[in-house]
Amino acid sequence: MRVLLVGGGGREHALALGLAGDPAVEALVAAPGNPGIAAVAELREVTPTDPAAVAALAVEVAADLVVIGPEAPLVAGVADAVRAKGIAVFGPSAEAARLEGSKTFAKDVMTAAGVPTARAYTCEDAAAVAHALDEFGAPYVVKDDGLAAGKGVVVTDDRAAAERHAAECGRVVIEEYLSGPEVSLFVVTDGEAAVPLLPAQDFKRVGDGDTGPNTGGMGAYTPLPWTPPNLVDDVMRDVVHPTLAELRRRGTPFAGLLYVGLAITPSGPRVIEFNARFGDPETQVVLALLETPLGGLLHAAATGTLGAHPPLRWRDGAAVTVVVAADGYPAGPRTGDVITGADRAGIIHAGTRRDADGTLRSAGGRVLCGTATGPDLAAARDAAYALVRDVELAGSHHRTDIAAAAVDGRITIPG
Ligand code: AMP
Image 1 (cartoon, protein in one colour):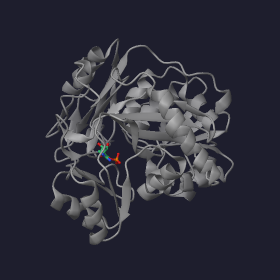
Image 2 (cartoon, protein in one colour):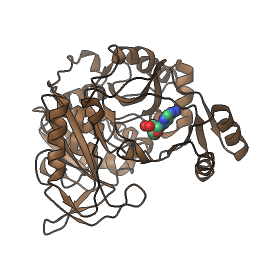
Image 3 (cartoon, protein in one colour):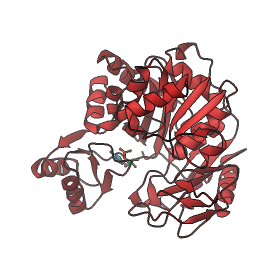
Image 4 (tube, protein in one colour):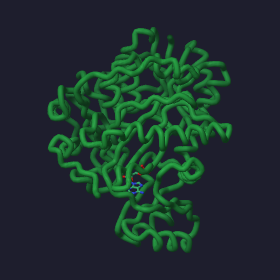
């Protein structure tokens, strides 16, 4: 199987490692890729959000499967353009990707499907915003209605800050605050059959102890020792299958990766958000434990044959990833700084570039992640931090508490 992987961040580096490790994948091309991915794939230039350009590249490289990493190409219709060329693609149509591209659409689907989620209003003017904030009270949750790369959500007790964010975004979804630890559940689906991967936890805030602004994600770990025993079965029954059925009913089946972001509240799991693709950085840890060959799994989802795919196999133990972010991230990351100590197994490249002379430099807010496995969470955590300690990048910062509360048994579900 010849595979074209679209994207160039940490998630795509993790996907590239998984695909390259599948004996059925005889050629792997990544576009645009990154210096980490270059070690396992041939890199090609492309604008990932240009449907015609990606489809043409898929034809040119004779791809049997195109895997689309990021959300923006999906929302732009890249999967549709590739499918129109008769090539199998892992990633939903633009219509189905609205589950991520529009918070209002996602709420509408959840309501129709009876999926447990926060009550919410879509607001377009100050009066509607004030009314919604009054109804739900603090803490206030204000979300940009469109794609915002994980940074469009403000959760705050400060009423003026909530109103300011709403005014800046224009159209927002304001919703009830959900309390409880968060879980990211990835589900591979062909639109009908659905296979859950291991639940993971992501760390959204920039600072230790969940302080500071929201980011794209500062670290992750799997598995989660603290979740209720039937969590995955319950979420498949109450969230995933009803959502997939509702999208089939609308004539826009969702095939690809359904990312279910959940809060485990005192009254059970509630959906915080859907995404239409693998999450970054949870992908790094989930795929680190997946033993089943990745190419075959994604190909089955892309060709409507997931129902016949054998059950997934997982490695024992745990995985932890710690993101190293650039100086100034998330407000205004500085790029172009020299990185040393990054050319080793376990370092996933997220925002890097390489000069002609081989010098590695930062090229984004989240620069790299140290990803490690171990026999248990404590060992995986130590190994991930050991990787991060050996990386040198001026001004960089990382959280020091990724997976710490889980290791110490300090995560509880409020009740
Ligand atoms: P989202 O982009 O919707 O995932 O939101 C980003 C982050 O904001 C989530 O991971 C949560 O930490 C937080 N968040 C979003 N919605 C809510 C909510 N209704 N209640 C509490 N926290 C939320």
